[in-house]
Length: 274
Image 1 (cartoon, rainbow, N blue to C red):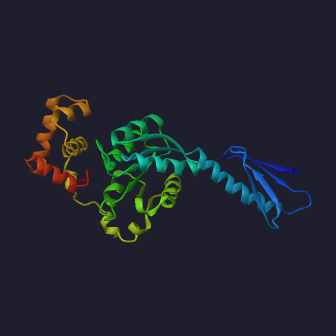
Image 2: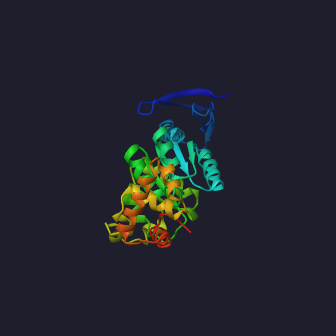
């Protein structure tokens, strides 16, 4: 039968970790009160060593369990798969969104530690959603997911305020690393991207969409998604005349006066996909 050895309370996390020892044996078992699961450690380890080692591991695990995440992807299968994987790692997925507008709304409501956003989403793309989240929920760290391996989106993502940039084909392990890194205040970029993108490319450059305001970018994305002026006005909560004014200004700013060419322009700028 296991007998109590010691109880340690972490002042900085206010969490307790109970460590027990089998009588007469150098085998240690510790139990984290937040999940009540025992963890057995084998080997000839001193009391001080096992205390330090297990306390450190326990603090990391409980920290992970308390982390709240908003997850946004317009593909239900992808979203549900990611949610299951994140929850198995102990993260709490407090909100799910299928478009950028909903992602911003949920983030403003829940104020999570992390928001994970697909780059290509309807109504509002990942870049503009990041910009809105940074404005309205500055304590939330954002991570962008993309299937595009061209890497040309990274500079714009970082300028918008994203703290993580993860390629979908790299697997969930990279996403977990990204979450850990950004919650520590760092920046995470998938290794294949960070080694192929020259540092100079992260400097400010004249992107085609830089000449548009945030609202104009959103209107342009909706035009590219096939929305009519009346639908755009309803989605943005503005008058039809206001939506028409935005459309006219966009055409004037980019010197494009046909809808088909506007759509191509939006795709080229990464606002939407084919």
